[in-house]
Image (tube, rainbow, N blue to C red; front, side, top):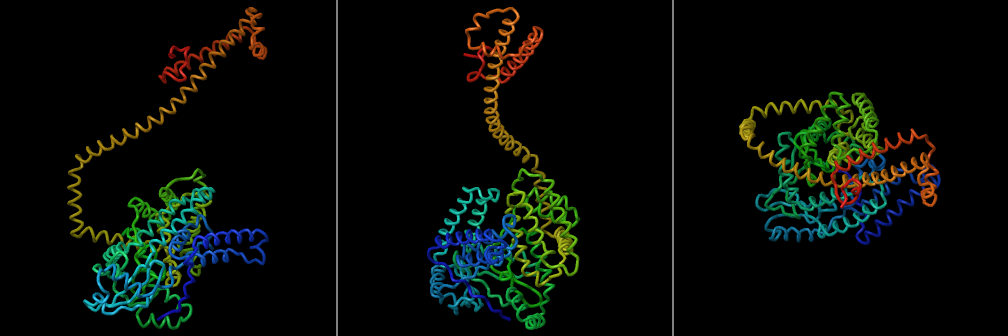
Length: 595
């Protein structure tokens, strides 16, 4: 079963900075035209769909890094509209291939020998091409096994480094202009840079293939075998899998449904069974195995006979922080119990920081979304978008965007995976009930844990745990020493901050003390001047005569009370200065602290 594929767009090979700058100017111009005449500008042309499609086509032409960056932006539904994110989610990394002779030269450079010594057959025309590399079909000479050979493009590392510099320039401009500062543009840049660094080293992908192959074997999910002897930094040699891509199956369902159903019947492929197994496996990857295929779009899922499937292109496999994984499981379990309040509480602990907003109001909004979503999951005929987890995540991101929450990058990686899988599940299992399937996952997980507890590995871990327990007193003592040193260093740092604050406070108190003394002297002089006419002739020639004239007219008894209260306040301020214990700058000379 085959399906027609759209040809890749014409790539931009030269003047990429100029093209990208022109692209940004065009987008800004379209946004301006939208405001000239509503709705959607002159002729109603500049709809959100038109704008999103224009951006997607331009990014496809740029290819490579820009597709990776756009896929990350598609996760930021807190920043962009659903239409825009959905359109960017359609991006597939396909490109024009490079000459097969160049691929042969790269293979020979990496293997250090002529191509004929390794392959008895090698097709120069690639069967697939992307921005990072392309895939050829060959046959190994030593055992005659049919293989897929993935070869990295020449100069791709230089191209990515140049494009990264362009991207960083524009992200720096966004920071300078204070465009959504809570979006953490630097985090996005470093995440993208790390992703590209990993994908440019094929040895990391080979390691991921081996780990995933071991982990998923029990789940009957097939991962192609990599021939490590022939796999290098720019070349991977792996077994060729004979199957049908999920993307081809989806095209066939649309264009030739009768042929697609006949193929399923002939190969014992049951779409609903595959859909359930696919969702359960993705859930297990994220909540249990902590080894996640981060790019499970339909082009990376291969349908096999007897309702099995394989995962390919493992360049984006990664793991999460263990603490984050525990919180993620707590969220899922709270959701299954319909404890939506706890779900939101745990979700907020996963955030890198909390904005200065009304958290309770935001929590109530998120709980209402959860309740509305839960009520639709078991209703027949509800569109897939309304019952899917991706739809719920989109609404959550919209709420968090309004409240300016910083992005949860690890959670965004998971939501990207679920969004990619949704493109397959909507055709395999359109009436999916996420609650029931998630409950089934945790029931199966309990069974796996019980089985593991009876295994030899579990007994070995128990012995190791007892040994660690016996060493606990010694380790506790070491920990106390290390923690005490850490606390001491933090205390020194904190003391330094307190010292600065106390210095400022001392200066302010000393200034108030001086002002108070001057004010008290003036009040006493005013009292004596009014009551006994002392110094009237002298005061008449002093600058304070206007000040005396502006003082309130009080009786003699009230002046005595004011002077006593002022003296009491000055005495307490003097005690405060002595408690601070500072000498030097700002010390009041009237307290005997001066030099």
